[in-house]
Length: 62
Image (cartoon, rainbow, N blue to C red; front, side, top):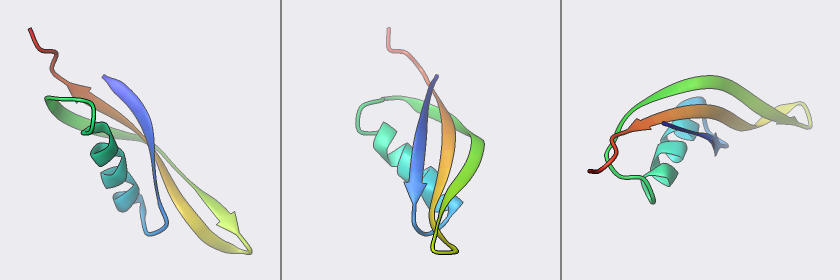
């Protein structure tokens, strides 16, 4: 299992997809994910960025 942060200016769902896409560049055999935390950034009174902390599970090659 690994844990990482995903970000998106659009939504929490897009931030989650971004995290999984980034992990897929170096991790094989991903099997599941869990959104552990949702946070965001505010700028000038508006939501600027959505952030998620995601745990991703994967199988180890033997």
